[in-house]
Image 1 (cartoon, one colour):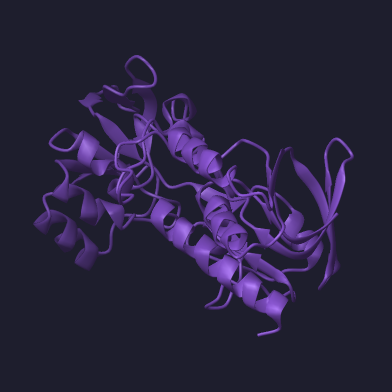
Image 2: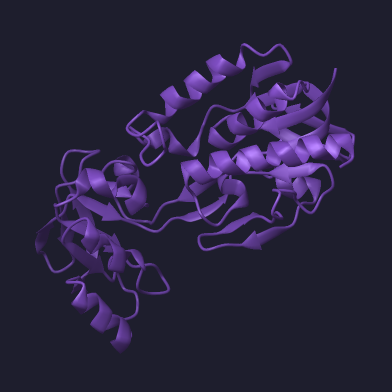
Length: 298
C-alpha cells in the first residue's frame, strides 16, 4: 500500500500529527520504536488536561482513540532506513519490513547524553532532572542544585530559587563573571566550587551529594545539562538540514514544520531547541496541516 503519510515516532508529536491526518481521511502509517524520551518520568506536568498523568498513559489513551479511525495503521518497530523523494518515500524497519508513502513526518525525538558523574543515570527523571518547568513544583521548598555546564553558569541557576533554595555547583567550570555573580547573589544562589564526586541516597531518589573535599551537602534534586542528539539518523539519510540548538543539533524547519527536503516535515524535540510536551504536540499538529496541504498542492 502507498500511504499518504508515514509518521515515524509515536509520542506526543507523532500522535498529534496522526490524529489530524486521519481526521482528514488520509491513509496514515504510524511507526513507533516504543522508547520515548519521557519514559524515565513518572508523570507529565504542565500539559493542559494531563497534569500528573504518566506519559505512557497519555500515549496509550491517544493510541486507543486513534484506533477508531479506519485509515490509520499502527506498527511497532524501529525504522532503520529512509529514502526517496516527494510522492515516493520508502522506510525500512530493522526486521526488514518496508513501507512506502507520499509524505513523511519525522517525530522520533532525541536522546540525552548525561553528564559523566556516577549516580546521575540511575536517578534520571527523579533525583536528577533537566527542566524546572516540568519537575520543579514537585521538589519545591527543598534544597536544589544545578550543575554548571562546560561553558559556565547555567541560566537555570537564576530560575531555580523560585522553587527552592539553590546551589550552583561549578564542577570545574569557569567562575561566574562579576555581573553574573551579583545576579546569583541577589537571587540567593550559593556557589560551590568543590566538585560533586558522588550522589547519595537510595536510587532513584536523591538525598545528598558528596564533594571532593569530603563535605556532604543535603540535596533533593540536581538539575543537569544534557547534550541532545536525534535518536535516529533518518533525517540525515534523507538529506534534511540540521542546525545547532541550545543543547545539540536538531532538524531545521520553517514555520509550518517543513524541513529542507520537499515532502518531509519534522516535529517535536527532534525539530526544536525547546523541549516540552505541549510544544511537541502543537508542532505535530502543524506538521500534519503542512503535510495535508502539501498533498493537496496548496
